[in-house]
Image (cartoon, rainbow, N blue to C red):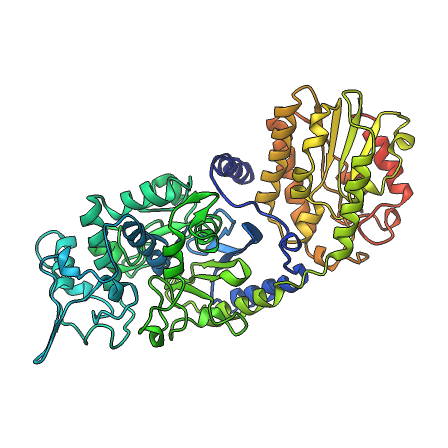
Length: 598
C-alpha cells in the first residue's frame, strides 16, 4: 500500500509539473559541467547527514537556462517517522524570501514608477520615525532598507509584542515605526528582518494588496509556479519538509519557522514565509541570469537586475546589494572559488542561493537543517558545495562524446527519410551497439536510431524528424545515461512521458513500445558513475511500468532475464565491461523483442 501511494503521489506531482513553467533538466555535460567533479557533492552531503547536521537536501544547479544538476538526498522528515527527500519537496525558504519575494516586488514597483530608491519611508508610513540625534534628523530611505543600512534593530521582541492587545500585525508595525534607530542611515550595516517587513508595508500600501497577492499576480502566477507561495495549502503541506519540533510538541509543517513571520504576520511577511521547491527557485534565479526574464517572461527590467546585482555607490564597503548579499559577514555560502561579483542569500532553516552571472550559473541548496531540533549546521556544507560547483564549471571534457553525437546525427540526415512502413529503434548505446537489428530480428524495416551516451533530453531534441515520418512503431530504450549522470527518477520519468506525448501528438497511429532499463554489474563495470545505482534502476523500472499502464503501451520487461538470480546485478557472462551486452546478451534480448515487434 505504501509503495502504491508513493507511485500515485509521483504521478500527481508529474501531472502538476508538466503544466508548470520550468527550466529543462539536462545532464551536466550538456551545459559544460563535469559529472565526475559534481559527484563529490554526494560525499560532502552524506557526511553532513552522517553527522546529523542536516536530515537531507535538494540541490539544483542552473546553467545556460537549463538545470544541469538536480538531486535529492536523505530524508525530508526524521520525526516522528522518516520520510525520504525527493526533488519536489517544498521548503520553508526562510530569509531567501527577502530577495525572491520582497526585493523583486520592490523593484517591480520601481520599474513602474511607484517608488524610487531615495524615497523616504515616512512618505508611505506616516508614523515611521526618522533617525534623530542632538545635531541631525535624517529620513530612512528605500535603499537603506534594501541594503540593511537603515539603523533598524536586527529583530523584534516577539515574546513581548505577542501579548499586547490588538491586531498583532498592527502591533508589529507600530513597533517598527517607533523603535530606537541604532545609527544614522548609510553609516553602518545591521542585517535586519525589520527592514524587509517595512518594505512589505510599503508594497502593500502602494498596491493595496497583501504581499502574497502581489507576488502571485506579478511574479509566481505569470511564471506558472505551482509550489511557490506563502502559507501553503493543505495539499502542498503534504509535500513540505517539516522544520522544528517546538517545546509545546508542535511540529512545524507548512508553517513558517520564523517567529516574526509566523506569530506577528500570520505567515505572510517580507522577511520570511515563502515556500518553494528547488526547481521553482531555479526558475526564479534565472530572472537574474537573463536580464529580468524567466522562460521568456519579463518579470524585471534589465536595469533593475543590473541595480540589484551590484553594490551601490557609497555603500560598497557593507557588501550588500539592494536585495542580495555579495560580500558581507553573511556571505560565506559563496565558498572560496567563485568570483567576487557572485551574490546570493541564505535562510535560517538551511536554505541557500548563489548566482554567478559571469558563468550564467545559479546554485540552489535547500535543506531543513532545523528539523527536528534547531541544532543543524550548514555553513561549512554551503562552502564545500559552492567550491565543488565552481570547480566543475567549464571542465566537462566531453569532446569525444559530442563528436560522435554529431557524426551520428549527420549519418541520420543522409539516410532515407523515415516512412509509415518503418520501425524505429530509438535510444542509447544498447540500441546503437545492436548494429543491424534487421538481421537480429529477421526484418527489413528496422531503422537504428541509437547513439552511444544519449539520454532522454537528447532523444527529445532529435525526435521531430523521426515522428514527422509517422513510423509504424517506435521502440524506446533510454535512461541509463541519465541515471549515471545524476538525473533523478522523477525528471527521467517526466522526460519519458514528454517523448511519449510528442510521438502520440504528431503521429497518433505510431505504436510506442517501451523497454525497462537493463541491469549492470557493479563489480565488473568500468563506469564508476553507475556505482551504487542498481536500486535506482530497479525503482525506475517500477515507475516505467506504471507509465506504460497509464498510456496503455506495451513494455518489454527484459530486466529479470539478465540478472544473477537473487540479485540486481547483470550476469557477468553477458557483458565485457559491466554495462554493454555481448552477442549472447543481444541474442537473449532479440528473442524477447520478437514478441513485440510488428
